[in-house]
Amino acid sequence: MLLLHGFPEFWYSWRHQLREFKSEYRVVALDLRGYGETDAPSHKENYKLDCLITDIKDILESLGYNKCVLIGHDWGGMIAWLVAICYPEMVTKLIVVNFPHPSVFTEYILRHPSQLIKSGYYFFFQMPWFPEFMFTVNDFKVLKSLFTSQATGIGRKGCRLTAEDIEAYLYVFSQPGALTGPINHYRNIFSCLPLQHHEVIMPTLLLWGERDVFMEVEMAEITRIYVKNHFRLTILSEASHWLQQDQPDIVNKLIWTFLKEETTRKRE
View: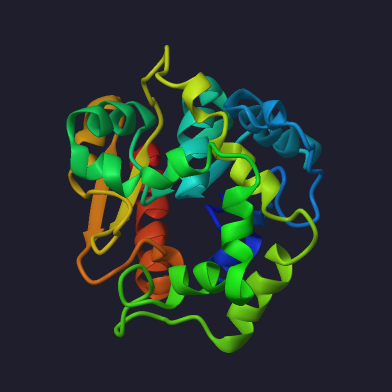
């Protein structure tokens, strides 16, 4: 089971799932290229989507496997969709958290100005150096507020990040140059979309926190069009963008149900 985190996160965002699924799976939560202590090439060309997709294939093979359950959240969800499209033989089951099929995203954003505004940071990140600087201002206030503010953070009913959790994030992203690699992921997106191939052929679970202020929930339902196999969508009304940290018990239960349901169905 490979877990791909989003932005601005790292492997630690999957801590609840690492504990949960280790009983039946070898669970590996990656740091994506440029995050944490991974290799972080300085040129933005090294962060094109095809490089990021190949990274996942290479890591899976280096672990001694030729297929996996692939789970991605946010930007890691984008990569998970693309791995599933480009290397379908590698992915037995696909689980994505709060990111629509990439073709849905690109088509929807062009037709809905409200989503274009919510994705405005994609355009902001095209600037050199200034986005990195903005995250560091006032002791990384922007980073902290993403997870804790009333507007974008985990709500009162969610599993809020502890002081130790926040400290872990601050430690990773306060290292010299630690934000450039992650933001470089976004600096290539316009050269890679739209996609030439769209179809997803393995069983797919899409989980969505309805209080996501970055992604409109309408995109979740439209995603169904591109999945040519069993597709399950579950929308959690009280949950935020940070779903697997916000509602870990519910998310884990939904993943277990999906995994076992598909296994049972195959046996039949």
